[in-house]
Length: 75
Image (cartoon, rainbow, N blue to C red; front, side):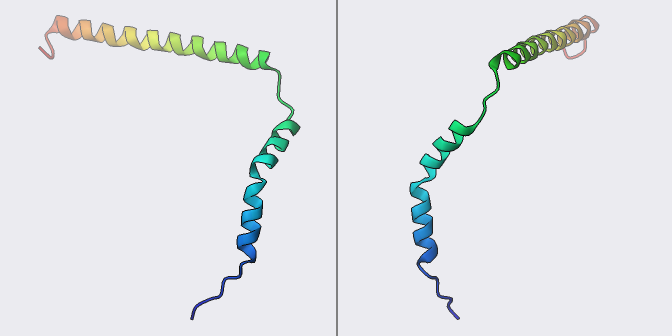
């Protein structure tokens, strides 16, 4: 049995698509955006932490590589 699909949802959907960008713009204007200073400071802390972690793991890998080369493993 075929179900009949009314054209009502299609017109609503088509009508709704026309207003998506306008609604999005209105919503963005309503948003109270936070100040950027605290977020920038957090961003700097994260970058510093990532650099320190990278250097730490680079040092560990380099140390083990030197150790294994001295012992003769992996030659």
